Image 1 (tube, rainbow, N blue to C red):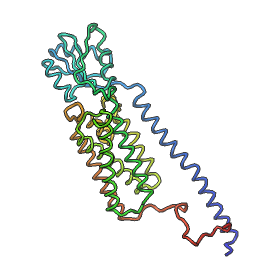
Image 2 (image 1 turned 30 degrees about the vertical axis):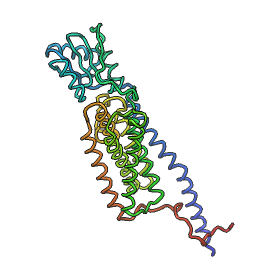
Image 3 (image 1 turned 30 degrees about the horizontal axis):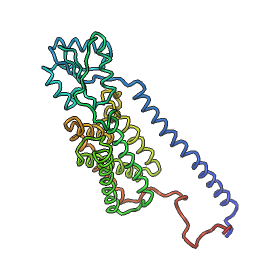
Amino acid sequence: MNTGPAQSVATADAARRAGLGGVLVPIATALVVGIVFLLVYLAAFHTPLPHRLPVAVAGTPEQAARIQSDLDNAQPGGYAVRAVADRASATDLLAVRSVYAAYLFDNSELLYAGANGPSVNSDLARALATGHDHLTRTDVLPATPGDSRGLSTFYTAFGVVLVGYLYALMAYHAAPRLPVAHRVAGLGLFSLACGVAAALIGGGAGFDALPAPVLGIIVVTGLMACAAASFTLVMMRLTGPLGPPLASIVLLILGNAGSGAILPAAYLPAWLHSCATLLPVGSGVRALQGMAYFHNDGLLTALLVLTVWTTACLGALLLKLGRPGPPRSSADIRPEPGNDSNPDR
């Protein structure tokens, strides 16, 4: 059948535009994601400094005010000092992470929790060094030998969120029209498997890097994986090809940066503070650290945040699955068997 010169030219122009888009769109998308990554991480961590990090002083209010002045001279605005009665009170606050260190004024001793990571402790000791020549340091909550640098909780959280993101990509492309019941069942099975794997690898049966209850690790990491996967699936259903890069910006860039890694939220710039609590990675990191060392600090908040994320995303997914998805491009439409129009075959 002769389609005519005009239609042939139009077809050639369309093919040329499609080819140009196939080259430029991936380049632009990858560049945008990469630029966002660089901007966020360099802005947040090029010179990380504490912002009103809570510190206790066992002494009188006047002595606490003196330490506050010393810390302000070393790092203006870096620390917020509170007076406590004695060593026992300071240790109790450290144990629930209400403070990150405690200074005992009478014997010039700094109590700290090694489980908070080396940066917090070294920064505070350096700030107190001036005028406190005989400062002694005591680690009252050391990290487990399997996690000597305090990095395991962050890498566990990052890993399960990354796996949740990748699962969503593969599940969507493998079966974009999967029935709702099958999609939810697959998501639940994946989340459970991810939580069990994290507990086996990071817990006592593996590297012994997460000294937290096995069930707690399974629940928190499973919810993190489920929240990440369901959010990515929703973004792909709502925005089509833009879904994966948008999800990666929220989950893998803002989420990981907002968690602070081995730094507490007080080291983050103000514009990242909300990410430490409201995104899956940040809430999960704090919950894992709390279960492991700090009497479940952050656990209830994380369970609430992760449950809201998962429920909201699953609700949006269930609503969206009842409607037609985004239109497929011509590259996704494959010819039916027997209707191959290629003249060379």
